[in-house]
Image (tube, rainbow, N blue to C red; front, side):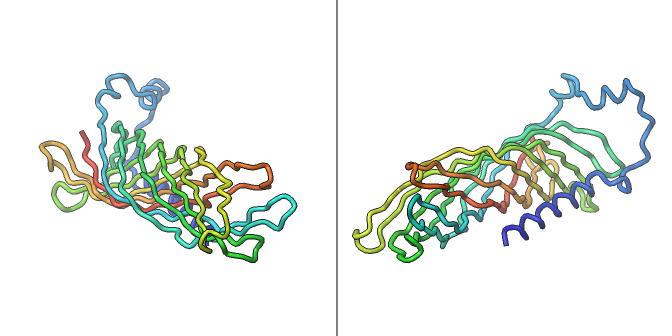
Length: 263
């Protein structure tokens, strides 16, 4: 199921990128001389100062965790089964965008957008030696993705409203921590707690679609919409050299609803 979801996500990113850059949506382009091309792609200091900061708030739901077998030296090993994949929390985003080239009705912008996705949790059971389910376990994940973004703004027939589309790629700094095991047989089986927290830098991508309404807060527009995140896969450290592999988070995804104000 994770492979299917990842393939669909990549296809969606590709489709929206094609929509943003499609020649059929572009007006006829002027001839660009080497000097004008240099000026267009290398923003000046005045262009950077003319950019807009973006503050975003919202909430997200995530899906993470993977059932896996942990091999133990000299033993069969333990099977970690996930019983709770999904969780939710708030969301904060900060960005800075520079207006780019207009293509017919489209207005392009480019920038950097970082997000803070606070703690969500995963839980499950541990089947020791593939025979005895005597323990449960849990851990939590926190994400700090940072993206290079390309966005397009398309005017709608309704006054002051625009459709927004954007895509972004970049690193996600994923913190996996708080791993803990619990006895399911009234303390007869002692928890191993063989994993400790770790921060992993993963490849991440995002795609968003929304509506912008101009002049909501004075001259500042309000943008609200949906955003999808692919957040990559994190890992834990092992606390003993008897373990031959380590627990990982599986591929992590998030769906978010959020609103933002451009300043």
